[in-house]
Image (tube, rainbow, N blue to C red; front, side, top):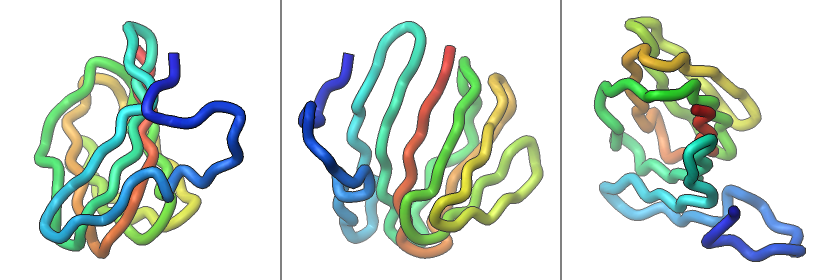
Length: 107
């Protein structure tokens, strides 16, 4: 089920992706019909434009600060904060500064 990650090893999720200048970097850990789990890093000013998901999406900021626009409402999240973006509601993600997040989508 899990891929791209060592098993039976203590780790920090934020260490699984590095920052790259001018880019959004992702590392998929789980992808199946029920759930998707991905770790992202965003360089400052980088974004994922408005889109909708076929499942409820939960994001947890692992480091830094990101801006999440969900159904037209803006949320600024910092390390340790979590937000649920409901299924079929348009949302976007923007790097207020460099930041890393865990995304889990349940279908």
